[in-house]
Length: 559
Image 1 (cartoon, rainbow, N blue to C red):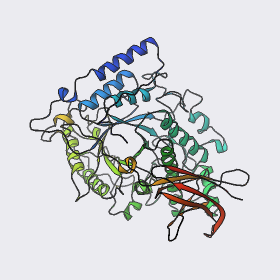
Image 2 (cartoon, rainbow, N blue to C red; image 1 turned 180 degrees about the vertical axis):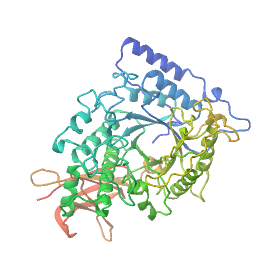
Image 3 (tube, rainbow, N blue to C red; image 1 turned 120 degrees about the horizontal axis):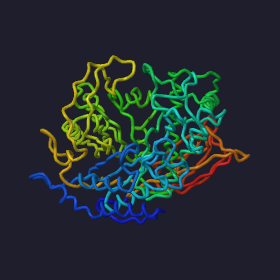
């Protein structure tokens, strides 16, 4: 992908607007384009030089606060990012089944601060690209609603497929006892085929219609649960449709317990299959799209690659994000390493996680997510320094700050407060001391330094290149398996093998919608074939030509 920080360009976007809105657009655009050059606005510190090494410097820009909800907000965001030498904006355009863009598959955001006719995504992409910044569309995957009162718009997923929907029309996940509301609200179940189809359509619609540099997954997982954490597994994922699919796949008739190992693997598979389908199909639409995700890094860090199986991402929310890197589904992982710097216990976890992350990028990129709101500016800068430090020859590729909305204003924990990193059911540590007084600005401490900490960004840096996207050497395949009656078939084993002698055979399984896909295939001609449950090849086959950087298609019909 062309580095927009080095080759800024203007993207023309048509926005239908009233006269007053057009005036606001013009005024906001002037704020961006007539701003003084970055170096003129923010002189370098004495003796400092512009950064030479590429480094991802990102801001998460949430849609619950000021960011892109109006032309003025978006213009201010771009101006702020340029001033402090940020090069990537991760902008939230789907909160909970809604949209901060127009013409989509879901109703516009219902918020008094947002004009439902304003295409926030189109505007910020145009403004950011003109300023040399990259934009990733941040899309919450599974959350659908949280409030007590239902959404006003009848088209909203919560109203159509929420707790009042009957039978298979209810797409929500639940606990084993049927509870559907979790601490973070109502979630779609990734094991429900219709919910999965809908989410695929939402992501691909954005990729097709907007000139975004990337799509950014958030909440691509099951929700966290209340009560003490189990040693293994979690009480979630019990949508009846998903449970019935599990029973058919395993030949069982029981409703599995939360810590059932087969059920744990099944739920991970549902999340991974959704991620796989969107990642591959997005590349079929736009070969140079970057796929990133905000990933879980809660609690104690893993001690090895094998130990990743036993920590929170894999056991509590069934998110195998390290496996996604290894498979090439993710180009960029952004683990949410949010930690209070003044809390010794969680500071140790932060250090352990980032050390592990630097060692296990699997040939892709990883930027450390820093919870800027949790610490003083000096504490955030101390975390930045440790993120940048090498672990032997291994490094992180940058960092992302949560969030653009007041990342330096660290609240003092109330008496008895528990750190966000305490695993439910464990003994809370002694109350952490309050952080030092936070600076009154939001972001400029990254440029100026704070206390005894040096500035983080003394000059601009380019976005690190992704050679597997910019000069690809491998391709991908996507396909569908159908029955004789034209219905999609799930759970079928598909064998992919390059033609010729002594070639490696790879296998995958069709998802709930009969879809399959595979990454990292060397160019050449491949045989794509079905296998029976015993591993014997069936006469159902197709040949595909794999080209570097392209997605080949295969269609198999079972006789």
